[in-house]
Length: 440
Image (spheres, rainbow, N blue to C red):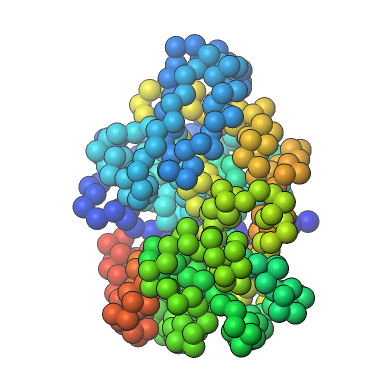
């Protein structure tokens, strides 16, 4: 039986992460409606004349295609998918703050990001949803809940930070098994470098993935309560645990274990390099595999690409649910549309779910719906790692500072590891104080 680490529902974060946004309660008058169990319409209830809107990011705007087609045919509803330009989260928060609300939206289902939308005021509670009991054991409690109320419906496997590697490169250099812990991981990289192979590829030009290198080093500490201590001010980013991870990252870069164009390389460059065998490994999340799938078919991916989680003492993954993993339903003030939005979620994770996973070539989150045979093995391995994974900073911290930006600046040579730690701590404390968190 799989076991999934439950995110503490008391975890909350800054109400607005986007600079310059106003109070997100503005969309519904500023006061949270009283909670109560909503009715869930039958999936085939007639919705002729009803129009629903789903907000999606540029990397998730085609995900609803099969569901929307099936739902429209079944119910007579009209469903429009609207793409919100990147940066998606900031764009959504800005719109919500002005009272511009969709019926549904893709959204990161962590406590911090549910708080960013002021979930009690702006989102429909999804408690009692007919699909909750259908989830594979443990997944229902893994994410999507804030202060004991469910606000997000998980539709795809939560993202995991870990190592994607080129199996052909490993074989060429006599590496027969993935590294079993951090030390072996680094020694594997040194062996590859000594053979003239670039071990690691980083995309500091696009910045956002730099933080994964620090966070995977913190997996064991996270399991031992690191983020609880950071959340209370007992431990800081400038203390040895987190600062040490930043210093280790800088040390590996200084050692020459990364691509020479690390300062300018992009997300797309990273995928090209791993597929071509120009680099052996990349620390990334599930969206990276989506990039690989856009460039290669299942046969090539199964032949070339493998995945393993990594942590200081073993192979523990770090989970970080993202916006492509879940949907939220908004309180629009229109009771009929709100009910229709719940009906669409019930269909999405009900009669429409098999078509959804088949259309997306993705992992099924329900035992009763088989995962398609076309899902590459590496993606199956990512999902399997959830069973022993631990929460990321985004999942467990009360605020999410811009660690990735500060790390990218470090890679550019503009700052030191100590400055990165101090900048991150200063921003974290500022965000925590804004929420009234004790200890800051």
